[in-house]
Length: 168
Length: 170
Image 1 (cartoon, rainbow over the protein chains, first blue to last red):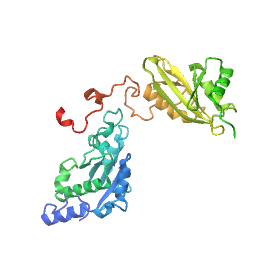
Image 2: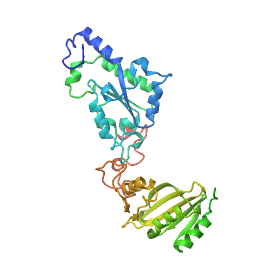
Image 3: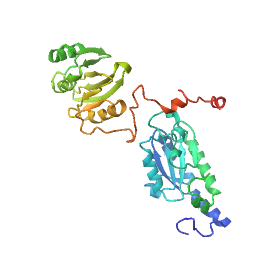
Image 4: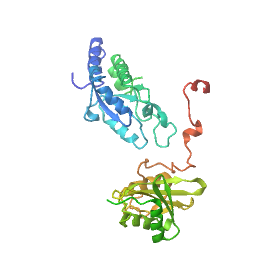
């Protein structure tokens, strides 16, 4: 079938759509954008006890160009914001973003800071928010399952044509 | 291996060299020397080069905003041979916060002075690259000054939304 684009043939045919989305949701190469203490919980989720590889999330892509899923874990500062935008733009479509932890959701405990971006969704579209400060590894597993449920019902053509890659 | 100097000894030696304008107190075993602005660079050089002090390690340079009392720059020196700590403090007037740079005496001070520069607006004369270190380039103002307004707190005073309280506000 080759590279998935908005022109992928038969993508709206039900069995093809099922197969396509089934394949995509269980092979999410993850790009870890660890910025603070949350990334430790993220690493914990990748190790033996929680092990998100059993959900098909493969750690770690060597760079954004190999990744399907961007996982922002930690405090995003205004100085770092252009970098995350650039990395996100380098990821191939279709791409997904999980915002992990209070800081990347909304600024968290740094809500009144002069230097912290109040939520990564001001920079890039976010698919799933995982709340907590920091969230437990189990919360990330739940977030991944939520994302996979979204991908399951997704129309690949709509995903491309919507202009934004976020699933709403 | 040398022996650590007490705060009194530090005071005696500094006053013998730089005159009575220097005030040294003991703070939890560290000597704290308040020096005049003009003597700052010479005192730091003296503490580094004098064998009795041999302060070969600079821990940090930082700023303090004392409100109407102006600013304070504090440089913490440590000796890895004598194991004593000397903190050099300089009081600066609020309307003219300028101090000599010591980046050539301690390489550590290069970045620490840049941080103090962007956070407090204290100018370090002779610094080779006086640009922002941690803040984004377009940032305006000096965020660690007491009079710097935090826009989020203008909208909602500290401590912000407390859990369970949000619904009552809206």
